[in-house]
Amino acid sequence: MVAVMSQTAPATPSASSARWLTLTTVAFAQLMVVLDTTVVNIALPSAQLDLGFSDGDRQWIVTAYSLTFGSLLLLGGRLSDLIGRRRTFITALIGFAAASALGGAAPTFGLLVAARALQGVFGALLAPTALAVLATTFTDPVERRRAFGIFGAIAGMGGAIGLLLGGILTENLNWRWNLYVNCVIAVIAVIGALFFLPHVHRTGPRPKLDVPGTVLVSGSLFGLVYGFSHAETHGWANAVTIGLLIGSVVLGTAFVYWQTRAEHPLMPLSIVLDRNRSASYLSVLLAGIGMFGIFLFLTYYLQLTLGYTPIKTGLAFLPMIVALVFTAQIGSNFLLPRFGPRIMVPSGMIFAAAGAFWLTALDLNSSYWPGIVVPLVLMGMGFGQMMPAAIQTATLNVDPRFAGVASALVNTGQQVGGSLGTALINTLAASAATSYLASHQPATQQVLAQAQIQSYSTAYAWVGGFFVAGAVLAGLMYRSRSANAQVTATTGAPAEDAEPVIMH
Image (cartoon, rainbow, N blue to C red; front, top):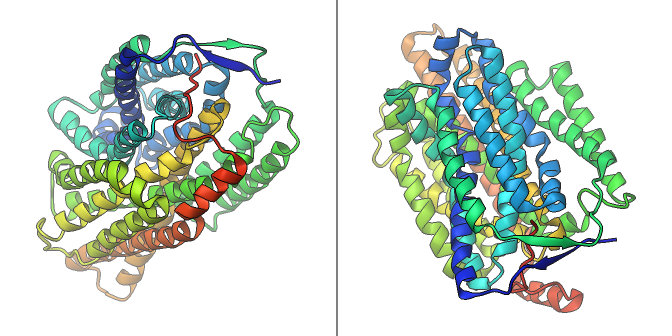
């Protein structure tokens, strides 16, 4: 039996205004989660010097966060559906801030890793809840497009902002402030949540959590993310890597089978069997591969080859951020209603691919203008075009009872894409450098530097290839606008301006 949710009060003009304050609150939370995937990277050398851990251990500062975050996202999304989004949102914010404070004050490497893992736990609760709040709050078509334009821009630019903020904090304060800054953001978001997130009362029995499904999918995602991380350091042919990835596939298959039999499924398969939603999840995954690949290798190039400081490296990404924000608003408010995701997502992928392929021309003496600025603007335009369109479509017309888990699938796609991109593209880039060195002996300083350039170019080319593949798949998978109208008429799917249902 399904629980019924009811609004405590009818919509009023003041409630309409409060929706935008809700968006501001959600945006702060989303920014905190997304930037935390890169802000700590800038601080790693300083943290390593301070705490004295080895190069081999360094990866665990990043891996501990991605493991818990990636493997618990679907559980976090479902919990927000079951126990109420306002309560879940505030709890996750407080937990994330506490874990960040613990990590910032950590006197040892072990405690820092534990704090990062705890950040991932609360991040997995926070990220899908934030998107679910947005999806169920903004149902008016015009307001929804504006809100998702802002949210999609944050999802796309959070990594770049993390690089900039990480450089500023590390150079002007110290590495610990890359974690402490989350406490400041969380306090603002908690205050906003207490005042602006709406109350909704539950009537009827509370649905049950699908425990077997939770165990299966969490194990599958853990094996997948850890498998990618392990491959990055130990290779794809390593027995542990292979075992983790095979185990992930087996558990994932068992999860899908169980969802067809469970009385209270964790993830009703109808969510992902919709063509538009599945196209959106795949697009977000491929965009995650490309975005994290670009952030990683362009950061290496700027700092190690051109000698940029951390702050200058972060500032170098500003043209991309500006282009992304501008394009996200234009795309969401004017282009998406006119052309639909079948045009917007593939064309955004093509812009991003063009920027990635442009970067392959960088050499040891390339200048910032136009060699770096132009491709960054192209990629910013691409991300701003594809991300809001894909995220908005991924959560459109989902039963409000499952908005949390549908939102979690978006975050899962981005997280898995980032993990896969980092591991796979790192491996391909390293192989390219090794091949170059093997054919250019002796290994002088000039040859070593050129081998690095070769590895970066290989990475950019593969990123471009992923974007092209994403454009083709998105173009094939998304329904046309006429087909969307026909499906809506046939199935009676909820209209885009249906009454919002938000759980407390």
